[in-house]
Image (tube, rainbow, N blue to C red):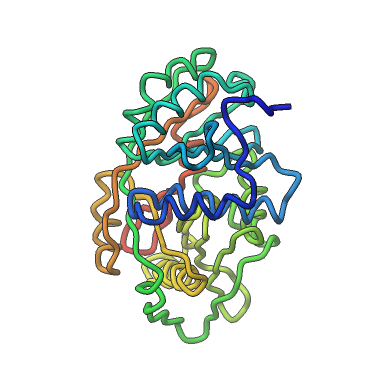
Length: 312
């Protein structure tokens, strides 16, 4: 159906070549690398979902990649370019592609572009969103730490408590107290418990008191501590547990912090994380909907107040 489209699906045999192009560009390319890695795993486990890795004609050698999923009334995508030719090809491809009827999606989120990629795409963004409510643009800071460093974390589980994998049956409880819950969020949380993974800190009676996820775009996210259990360091345990598990799986850790959140920056700096780049997010939603709420739902960047609060 899209044999001659401006954006072509990357064959499974060429996905490794895309990774090989992105890895030497760390840390600027870390969001793109791990979002794609997460999408590849997601597609294998849920093949009926509309998930794809695309490039302009010419494949990965064009110097650009476009990756997305649709679901929960969203089109969520991001892009990365590493050559001037790739920037030009991606701009034209976004205008020419017939794969997406941009106006048909209730929500559209473009995740964590580098400032350079955003500048390259800025001329075509108004055209893409021309038949939609005007998008909002926001910024955050991306931090990262290589796998070989996070595996050194000493995860200290408090006496009488246990760490365990989060399961689908925990999604309802987690979603019910998530400040940014909205339509589709419980389903997404449930799906992430087995497409990616999450870790929970449990009391001896089975009560879940803190949790963290390897979130859908391949980053640490949606961390929270039960309201009556805060300021006891439980959030830190959950964070370190997920980070260490990511490292043991060979995954470098990246995460997003809202600019100006000095508490979170200090927390992750103390763990050894380094700032990678400024991320640019673009979000379009119906006019009667709070863009900040839906943007928070998908992004889930960290707000570690007293080191035991929640990602928002």
